[in-house]
Length: 261
Ligand SMILES: Nc1ncnc2c1ncn2[C@@H]1O[C@H](COP(=O)(O)OP(=O)(O)OP(=O)(O)O)[C@@H](O)[C@H]1O
Image (cartoon, rainbow, N blue to C red; front, side, top):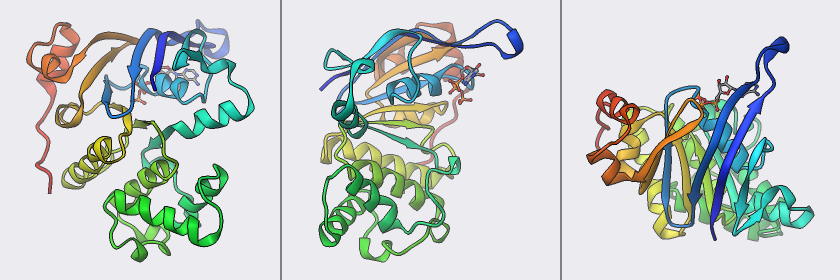
């Protein structure tokens, strides 16, 4: 399975007749199962817009997003539903990704039913428990009846990850998924995410402005600036020998990440 953005551009209509905003310009990237790909760049560089195009939430203005060589804009009905299952979003919890009135079992269980991963109360529950265990929430039974406000920030983020992996995705597009967490909690959640590339073989497009995070977990890095990908490469190469002045500036400004707990 291969997910690609091929020279994608997104422009938004300018406010009150102003010039259009080109949020993403001619960007190409590749993501595949088992691989941790990161997109870094400062606020407003177009990362979230690129993520939303990959997730099929907004259409591209130009270029294509392709799954195994098929333009996702052409997908219909069942094919589009399958895409929505295979490419999952994990956003940061403060964005209101979890409904405050739903318990953990319901929050995860309802997407499991919706995508027909399992049906029947006990099969759905088993799937929910399996997903919670994969993100380190053990014993999972303790968390099933909790509401989001009864969980810590790190636990809420794990529930969001569990909800995504319960569907057996190939790729998770994570937009600032750990950015709001305290340093030590962040390291734990990151480790859970990184481990999933091996335990279930999921791949990531991990969007962040946080370079220490990238340094810790990414295999391959794309650097975005003003809507363009200005540099890309395997993490070790990029950190050891940044080519673009913007990448060098980013690296110079990055603090160290706290050690994992
Ligand atoms: N719906 C929209 N209408 C108009 N302009 C938009 C829209 N969405 C994003 N933009 C603009 O596109 C540019 C890129 O925004 P985007 O949110 O993709 O950047 P980002 O790198 O994700 O930043 P952040 O880290 O702050 O979320 C910004 O100039 C933003 O104002």
